[in-house]
Structures are given as C-alpha cells and as structure tokens.
Length: 356
Image (tube, rainbow, N blue to C red; front, top):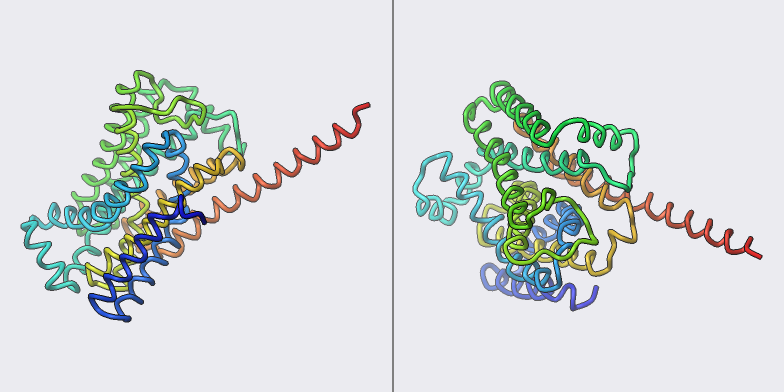
C-alpha cells in the first residue's frame, strides 16, 4: 500500500493513537485500535461501492474526498448525525445531548440504540432506491442474467415517472406495515424516517440531473467526462450520503466496544480514513474496469444491506451478518471476473496460435 494512496490513513493512525495514549494510556489506545479494525471489517464493501461513484471524478475531487471527505465522515456521519437523530426524536436541547454524550456515555449510547429503527428506515430506503435504480436502468454488462434481465425489462416497460411512483407507493406501504408490526415505539417515526430517505434520494438525483442537463446523471458511466461545478458538488453530496448509510452498522457496533465518545470518534475515524484510502486506491488502479463484475457485486451488496436494514426496523440483525453478506457478493463478483478474464486470455491465445 503506497503512501500516496494511504498517506491520509497512516497519518490518521499516528495522530489517533497518540491522542488515545494521551487521553487514557495503553488501554485507550487498544480500544481505538479495536474500533478501527471494526470499522474496516464492516465497511470493506463500502470501499468498492464508493469506488463505483468516485471513478467518475477527476483527481482534484478524489483528493477532496480523501481529505475533506474524511473529516465529514468522522465528525458528521459518525458523530453529529446520530446526535441530530436523537435530538429530532426526543426533542432534547442539542447542547444537552452533546453534554450527556460526555457526562453520561452509557445513557447516551442506550438512547442512540433506541432510535436504531429510524436510522435503519432511512438508510434502508435510500440504499434500496440506489439498488433498484441501477438494475432497472439496464446495462450492457450482465453478471446474473436471470435476475438482471428481468429487472431491466421491467424498467423498459414503464415510463420513468410511473416506475418511480410504483417504487414510492411500495416503499411507503412497507414502512407503514413495518412500523405497525415491529417498531411499535416509533409508529410515526419509522415512516417519516423512511420517507426522508426517499426524499433525500430523489432530491439529490433531481438536483444532479438539473446541474448536468441530462436525464441520467447518476447512471454509472466510466467513459463520461468528469463532472464539474455544481454537478460534481451534488454527486459528492450523494457519495457522502451513500457513505453515511454504510456507516450505520459500524456506528451501532462501535457502542458494543466503548461508550466513550472521544475514543469512539477517534477509532471509527481511523477506520474511515483507511476505507476512503482503499476507495481511491481501487479507482486509481482501475479495478472496476479490470474486474468487470465488481461493479455489479457492489450494487448487490447495496441491495443486501438495504434489505437487512429494513429488516432491522424490527429484530436486530448482527453487524457481522450484514458485513459478511455484503462482502460475499463482492468477493463472488471478483472471483467470477478473474475466471472470465482467464477464459478470455486463453481463448485469445488459442486464436493467435491457430492463425497462419
């Protein structure tokens, strides 16, 4: 792993461990290291998913993702957003919530876990829309024909607005049933959180389309001109929200390691820096071009996590299961890509050998 690609991650590790040692000695540094490993393990699939979007940016925006984006991921997605959710649900004063996270970490962690169904509803709906948008639009490259061709045919059969209306109605009905059946503590909150995820997805998509002056700005196209200006900014926001939804499992899992907010932020921050460095590394190595099914595997990973988050509105889903399921799709896509590449190389070698 070259310093150019992982320099930010190495720097975050040294700074984070030094800060942990200053705060609580070796014990605190050990907790931070455990959290960093947890974040990387639970978010490995996140790196591949992010790479499917980040490869459309030029090198300047990739640097922004790796520097400014890390700060957003650490302080925004893994520290501020859970607090804002808690403030919105409990109607507590934001300063009181922040103070409690420091003075009563156990109580704060318990309250964060109590609003998990709302976080799951938002993230599950947002990811589900991304998953459906990718496969309904159809692609020249197909990994699993039985599933992908049927979804692409469904996307061609309906007009975009009719299809989106069908998606919205289906999602809202599911949220109402889930809230009434499972999330009895949040009968209104779950539908509201899910619809917020829906609105967030469509708002970013519409603003991106307007900025790009074309109908399918979120469609993955590695050959397109890198986005600039407002289009690049909106796609960057889209990428940050995508990263946030993937970070929910590590945020919840982190409270099983420690309720100390300072150590929690430092540890997950180090892990987030490695995940983002890995994302940039995959883009610069053109891994998605070399391994042709890897992008499909990433979107299947999005679909799996979306389903598990929506299930988590009710019963708790172990963090390791979500990570294992998502990573398995990516590993399977990678292996199939390697097998295909070898087959094409062997066929090419035989063809060249038969030439007179």
